[in-house]
Length: 366
Image (tube, rainbow, N blue to C red; front, side, top):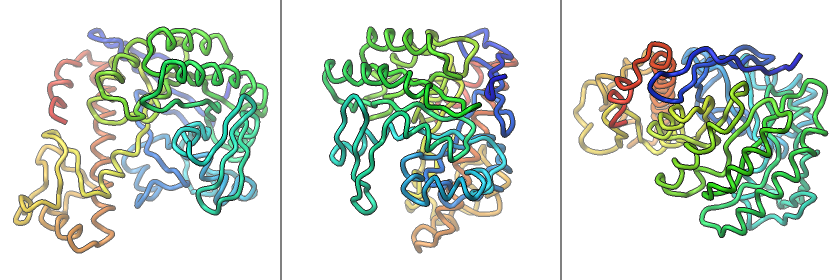
């Protein structure tokens, strides 16, 4: 029996949005779901008990970074990543494919694999589909992503086509390398070119992956180019498997992705923006360091008050940032993650109850 399964529970009568349930070895994930990003086995400034209290059921960790430090062998010795980081829920790891793009100046790529220089100490790392799957297997995660080539934006059509070709070439190698019971998701590439995306979606859908992801979006392209890709590709993916939009993000883009038929999301935005003193509210994103909040005894958003942060005034949070106190980043991160958790909960409710237009009106300015 597959270790990861997806059950479709409801479909929005107004859109292609799906309400589902993802079952993994470490519990179920109610979808649509957002995964906080714990690159190095930790969501910055946030403990696992915080994530559980907020209601998150799955986090994303980074294969490339964890293989460098502390190393997959140590993690395996410690009982796997769940035991090592004290996380009871599900874990999905990326494959290192994003670093193929983000570390382009430090790598050489060919059809066999990718040769990196570590950003930590300069030592050479050789990553192949087989090696990526092996690392993720040793980490013991619930869902492993296949190694792909993520093209940058902007790039030429030929560059996008070549990255897609290599992703397709590597796909069967990823599958052949997995351990018994190791769930692997495939990744659709093709840049901003609709015909390439259709070709990639068809190719990946025919392989026995446990889920499919739309990759290569949110890599610098404007929203008006990103959203058509998601809207065209998501409905092409198998209905009986989870659909994952990698690296997205902004509340408006999440709502668009869900309406297109996406089930899973991840992004660094809620915690990264928090560390840069930006908070998400129903009135839009605000900068807590500005003078506007100096004398504010209440919250930044009376419609977004969460148990984890409700005792702290906007003026106090502004003071923490201006004094460079670490608590400021933590409280802002808790606020933003609570905002995202509520967004996903209300999305699921809107799909089930058929109230999507009211949900869109509520988050129109977010």
